[in-house]
Image 1 (cartoon, rainbow, N blue to C red):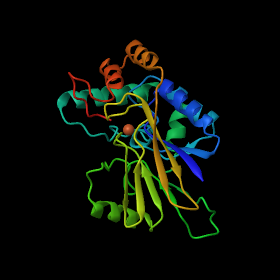
Image 2: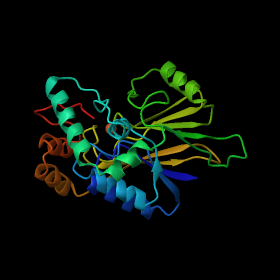
Image 3: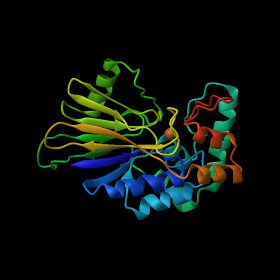
Image 4: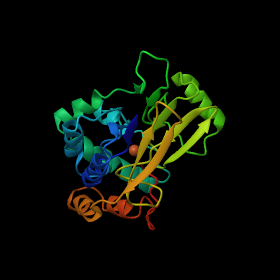
Length: 257
Ligand SMILES: [Fe+2]
């Protein structure tokens, strides 16, 4: 059973359009799921949500979605200097002002976690667990540097066993590791990659009969349109530069996400 997993779109409509088109070319993909953070940092929050809904793509709530949806005081993002903090607040306030009531309600209603049983719920497994950050909180970062112990703690919390997969995003940095037979997959980011590659990233996950396989896919998209959209909005131009450099702008080392 092959699934496409897309995460951290962050209102980058050109990137999402390119990824969905790319997925459509894979005739053997049975379903696409998003792993949250649909909005923030780019000027198309309503359009992004509408497109996902039009495609019937289900998914989980990212920290951005749940904080916008519940009128929380900030997006729950990490920042490492005052400029990042400022940019983060500008983005959050802009997004809260610009999402329609319908979009906001949709974000608030997203589930925290989704379980897939590719062989059917009538047999024991394997199980694919979809969350945004970790199985405990959608704000907690799970980078590749986390220890095996951390991974096992999270899998125990999630009720995962050998042969299962836990897939998540949030850090915008893709990785895959197997610990004691459990697969941990960070899908990277569609609309705001942070690994120095500006192209949209997503994962094709094959699970069910036979061994688990994880393919990291990168897709070029209309970057100029995305950058122009940011510049023509009230969002800071820094976000356009962030997109162009794949999260590694020279002047502002924005770690915000
Ligand atoms: Fe994110």
